[in-house]
Image (cartoon, rainbow, N blue to C red; front, side, top):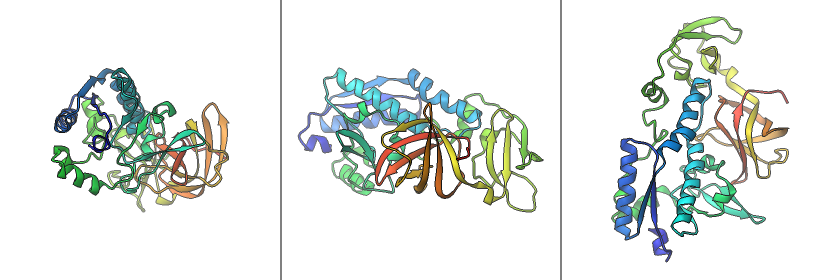
Length: 326
């Protein structure tokens, strides 16, 4: 709607990624909005590729003891596919409803935080290629969610009242329920302390989250938290809250758009967490690095994204790996 009002020639498109109610609603919402605005509407079935490139790595990550972030992979996947679709229709660029901005520095495009910090999605966009970013626009980046809903409602768009998803689109009930639907059966394993002492039992390490306290069902003299999940051994490592704090961790699959030695940067380690100052970043080659924080951070989870910011601008990212010395 905003682009139409700005005088752009607009074509609407929705990718079919998952056979579910969510996918059906997205298709209906996209088609309905296109009809209301009088724009052509395109759809493309990408379910097979989406399962192979996003869903299967998500399942494998949980079974390996990691906490994967499928939205990061989904954004990279679907924005690249949308750009290809746009080119096939003769469109020069793509625009989406993400709450983020694209800024240019020294002739290169970068992702930056949105004006609405509560809805900012820049963290989820660190893996989007520069080729895609150069042809990408986020019209909502300077607006708040409330403003957007108000404009959509005033224009009579049905999507104005759509609820927000808090989980991966293909796993709206959360990872535990999703893994069960994918044939992952309960498997008994040990809950162990930091020194390897067995202190309890569980029915699958993938059912837990680093930092979790409730649900361990371990009798101990002090509250215990999940410190680590071990896929190969099917173990959950538990310990006191102070043991959750990490100051040093590794990253793999590093994207470097100006990281240097980390001086002056902040890093965000979860989508809903605050960014923390980087004390030092040491490159290890082969897309790996080791990061030292200016102060410890609780519940650093292997498999999550570490996204580095220079002010509001994303200058790199990586997937958190095992803790390393630095």
